[in-house]
Amino acid sequence: MTTTRKLSGRARKAVLLVHVLSAAAWLGIDLALGICVVVALNTSDVQVAGVAIQAIDVFAIWPMLGASIVCMISGVVLGVGSKYGLVKYWWVAIKLFLNVGMSLLIAFSLRPGVAEAARIGQRMLAGDPTAVISGHLMGPVIVAPTLLLFAYVLSVFKPWGRIRKSASQPVKRERRDLVGAV
Image (cartoon, rainbow, N blue to C red):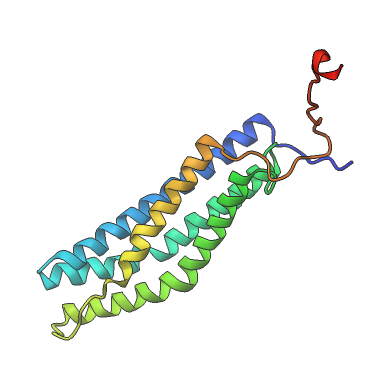
């Protein structure tokens, strides 16, 4: 029988606080990214658009990636150090899958797109009339906060139960009525 070391109450609360704060920071950065993208795409002022789109290159990628990694590490520590485990419950496994997937998307998909948008912002500020911001950044602006909010809902409601029943859980037996047995 394998025993896992559980976190003490104080340690669990500390890791949980780090987890919640990193998830909140991640969502906040995502929302700020969304505001900058919406402003850049909807303003008629080229200077405002150029500054807004360049701003996302400054604050979005590395802080967002950092928050996602801290969220993932603290989530893994909570999973390993609590009764929920990493892949015992559907809601934990789905949150882990979302976190890993979104972190990879930040690093390998969003980062190059933001860097290209920042270059377009520089060209706009330099007066290049051919520099136009593409709407391709609207996808992450909608999808990422939606997935993060879904992860929050999973954390609160903990739906779907265990992935598979453990051998130590008693199996419920059907009660036979004496009248029906005769």
